[in-house]
Length: 437
Image 1 (tube, rainbow, N blue to C red):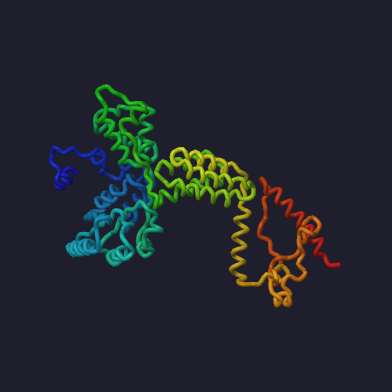
Image 2: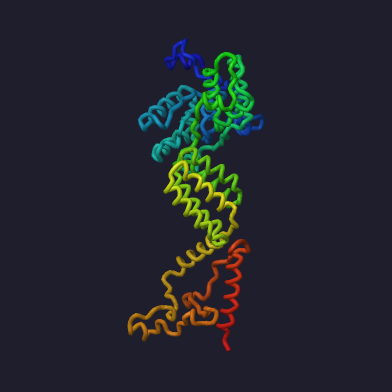
């Protein structure tokens, strides 16, 4: 590793970052990925058979993807070549491929590690296919984004996807312990502050070591930081979250499902995380309105009113005051009785509407503004419901060729219980009034 930094132009007196000094030198030293590098891990088994194959390493930042790629090259005695999709173009790829071909003719195979591989466009991704197929390179791509959405199907069919997990508290703790051994001194933190530092890392091992370095730099002789002191020293680390990518979709999905599952505490947690990460409050407000319609519906019609009121309140108050209105709406919708009966009914009605096409409604319910339309029977025999007993005529409103359909089935929860009783009552009246003598 020292040679690597000297070649990069770093002098002897330049201190290497702690995260680099602690970079594992064997797969056994990689923490938090036992499902891959443990005794029965996927990579362990591949190396035992000496048949690595091309791989896509998918996981959050700081979970060891680059380190594992380097170690795999060492374990398989392959030449390690690294490029980044952010800084490389077609010309760079051609040069790398030509060098790999020449190396192969000389009897040395190449492991090509492509960082941020999802940044390559579709055509650039396709350029890897020939050199993967003929064995010129063993491709290992690293990505923080879901490969199913970001990588070509042809590329995915030629590579195995291995999922790297965010580091849990135990794995972060092992990293911090190793850092203390390397530094030869304990972290100047109380037990609670140490746990808080691990939480600040958000599952990112590299970030946890960077934070540890900041603590050591800031501590005066004999000083030990509590949680407040830690927060003052390291300020605040921005959460790992990209509003246009996986973090955004994962958290809004978690928020929606927590609301649907009637768990206001989990829903508040995800709401707070998204707001803390800089998500648009109005995006969240729109989604809460959707939840009120989709998952509560008429079981509690007030949920939609409150969700809309929260949106208006945020528009009026702004941040941070308006965030409380969003929290109120999330709690209300999460604790409301649930029904997706309207959602299900609307989907079924749409499907039938597309299938039925342009069937004409029955003429008796249509207006007849012209003489010709009256002659054609428009409006004939229409019964004005308000003039009927119980303000209900029971006549048919569907196109005649369709016959009566049933989409909406209220549940036995909340206000829909009352709606269900009304519909059952109307069904009995309809049957009675349409019964042929």
